[in-house]
Every structure is written in C-alpha cells, then in structure tokens.
View (cartoon, rainbow, N blue to C red):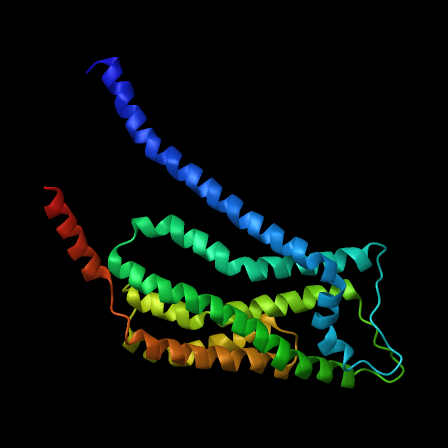
Length: 263
C-alpha cells in the first residue's frame, strides 16, 4: 500500500472525529450563549429574585429582625450568584435538547422512543422537586428553626449562608425527584427487573431515610419531607417500569438487521 493510500485512509478515519468534535463545540457554545442571554435578561432583577427566594425565611423572622451581609461584596455577589444559577436552571431544557441532538444519531429507533419521554419527564421532575422544596419544605423547616431558638437570641441570617443552604436543598430535592427516571432506565436496560425492585423495597425505604438524613438539616421534619417523596417516587418508578421492556433483545435484533442490510 502506498503512502498516498495510507494518508487518504487516515484522513477518512480522522474526519468524522473532527466533525463530531466541531459539532460538540458548537452545541456547547450554543448552550453557553443561551444561559448568558437568560442571565443578561434577569440580572436587572437580581435583587428581586433574591427577595423571592428568601421570602420563606423572612416570613418567619421576628419583628424587627432582618437578614444581614457579613462580607463587603455579599450584597452584590450573592444576588449575582443566584441569578447565574437561575439562568442555568431555566436553560436546562435547551441544554438537554442540544445533548439530545448530539447523541440521537447514534441511537436505535426504540432507544429514541424511550429517551424522549425520559428527557422530558426528568426536566419536569427536577423542576417539581425544586418547587416542592420551596413551597412545602422551606416554610415548615424555617418555621421550625425560628421557633426553637433560645430566648434572647436574635435571628439574623447571613444572605450568602442562606443562599448556600437553599441551593443545596433545591438540588437535593431536584435530584431526588429523578428516582422514577432512574428506575425506568434500570429496568429498560435490563440491569434489574420489577420483581427484583419489589424484593429490595425495604432496603430502598431505609436508604431514602439515610439520604434524607445526609442531604437535609438535622431535624425530623425536613428529613421526612425528603425521604417520603423519594419512597413514593420509587413506587411510581416501579409502576412505570412495567411498561418499559428490556431493550437488549431489540438492540440485538436491530444490529442484525443493519448487518444484513449492509451485506
């Protein structure tokens, strides 16, 4: 084989990789651009956004008490940080769409039919988890914390510490609400079955409370408010997993069809 033939074959094998890398770069840039555009549109309302997020705590502060900023740059950086996180939060659907557009050409048809509803449900469940934390968990947790303080102690929470706390809670509940998606994926991929999951139910319930203990403040209320929805979502995942058949046999069948067609 001549050098020209070898170089041409090397170019043929390298070209698809370069094209994929260029496509990946373009989709990453598009995702970053969308997040930046959302951020620029929201930055003017940064203080209003922080006021909305801090409302569950401020509603339970004693009369005359307020939140404080203990660092020089906190009044600017804390709303800035929150607005950036909100921009990423709102841009998740577009980012997932770009990820889907990049990987979908390499998926089989039955995998695409399964992936689309899973992507949509994962976004909705994450938003639902964050909303559950804000509207249900925060009022109960902050009402409990502010009511058990020692007498003579004035509650004056630092705005940066508060933001770190609520962001952890948002992401903890958002990720916990993805349990149905994870359950369906495990069953659909053939890694487990519905019957096996039912047998492991006692361990899952204990695991939910352990996760609730690790991800939430050290009080029974917030731990239960995370553990119980996780358990119920696991049960929902088992129900939906009945409709998700293992894709291993289908994948092998499609591979055989593609091989026969190529021959």
